[in-house]
Image 1: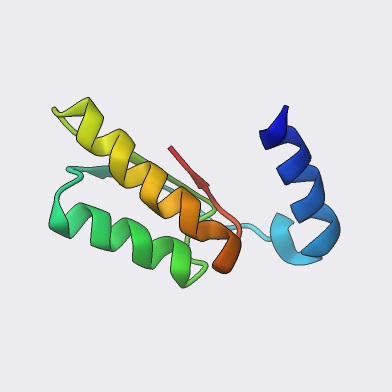
Image 2: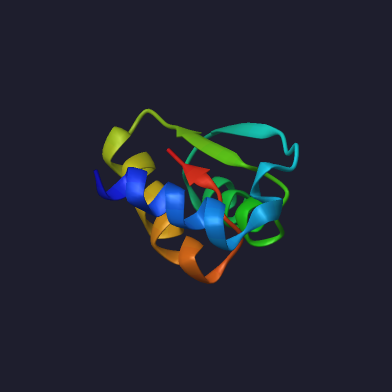
Length: 79
């Protein structure tokens, strides 16, 4: 429910949210993968970033770190 409300609010506040941006899947959530994921979101290059790693907890942790920074960055879905 909170995610739906957040999405609705972003749609109201940022009309350019619907611009066509590619989705990205990054294999590896280590230092390089997480840095690239952050860059993709910070520079409004990607609308969605997915981390894939053999260590699921690491991938989830990196995704959550970037997701928590998104209110200060461009809107993006981080999985």
